[in-house]
Amino acid sequence: MDALAEKLDTKLRTWKPETAAEVRQRVTEMIELADSDVLDLMRSRAREQAVLDMLYAPTAR
Image (cartoon, rainbow, N blue to C red; front, side):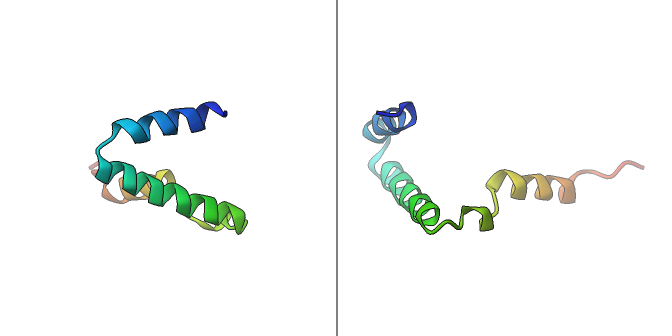
């Protein structure tokens, strides 16, 4: 089994049930997006956070 899948399996068994359910839902959504070949259309959270950081960064005076 892939190392990532093994890590996910381990984590799903140790997280609170609510957390595990949320992760399962998000992973399922990612798989569906990948199967539909539309991952490139989705904004990455890291990119979105970088834009927010730039918008709310203190301005130099």
